[in-house]
Length: 163
Image 1 (cartoon, rainbow, N blue to C red):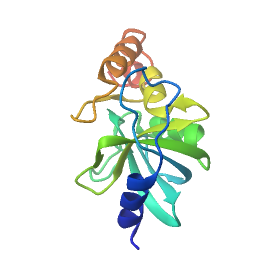
Image 2 (cartoon, one colour; image 1 turned 90 degrees about the vertical axis):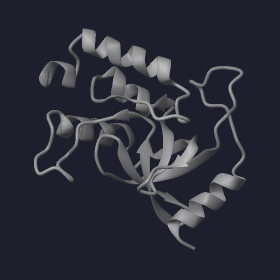
Image 3 (tube, one colour; image 1 turned 45 degrees about the vertical axis):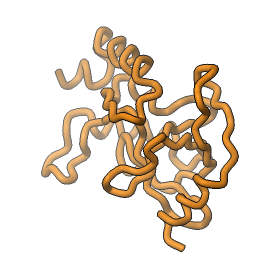
């Protein structure tokens, strides 16, 4: 079974659960528990699911590019990658799969939780990312926008180093 087929099967059968930061009354996303194998950059990781390595792209955030496909890394890409590595590297994480589960590159789209903290939100709060809203995966758009605005106003992360 390919990694894509394994994730598709898991997404269909895993029971749902409430995440600590999820607003009450909202439809609960499908959840998967996984072990982080590798941090690719600030907003992409590889996890082990059902014995298969699966690429996961964080929903709602965009971190500076690390040099691929562009020839040079963007400002603050190393710091964003390092922060992501500190937050999730080698850890067990919970993935809350988006309403649209895959992007055009077959990466699983998810809100990522580590030690009860939503990593997507932490990247925005620290200024390591900016918002990237792509419906229908827009559950936390207002919250993410507020976190980005606060980081900008305080010149945190890329908002101080790169602008």
